[in-house]
Length: 134
Image 1 (cartoon, helix red, strand yellow):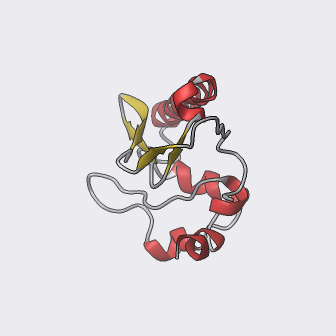
Image 2: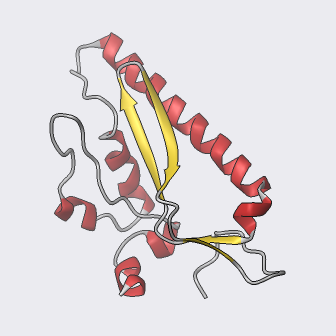
């Protein structure tokens, strides 16, 4: 089931999929919209929905959205560096883990969550989490 589901999303080509985009007020993407994401070109517009909405004429809100996007990118880059250097990350599989993006008018954070199914690999096995599942 997971292999079939992954083949219908960006999981096999990009290594992740977007399962939800919501806000305090309402969902910002429907399940049908999320299922349509097939390639990298569709990911960025969907991730922009994580940011607080802005009116086109509101320059302050536009600058705030840019700052939030930069915070998210910076945190993703730092997380990538930390995980690539981590012996724990190289020696464990992370089934069902997620990145939680939190953005509001005053800041943005990225969290690695849903680690309940994290399992150690057999002794001596090292993975980089970039190759397809074997």
